[in-house]
Length: 107
Image (tube, rainbow, N blue to C red; front, side):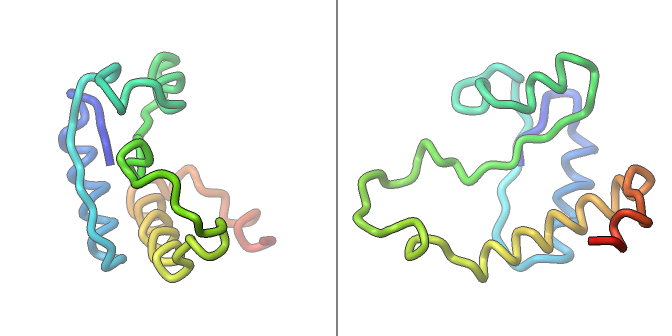
């Protein structure tokens, strides 16, 4: 998780929610919005319009490239499920007032 310099407490709260609900390891840090590999991301457009945003990444630029596995073979579905569970709790613990329970029940 990457947050802006003025979002220390927010990032701490979000990370706590994730850690309580998922065993996946997580690293977080705060940085300048346009710094290095965290700079050219979609979340910045929301920040520029005044919306709070957070970058969640798998550090794709730093992974090994050129492996011969297909996408399906390369995906770890158990870890993906743990990620979704952790992110669900981040949203529900911190932003539940923005979740529409009627539409959630329809899904």
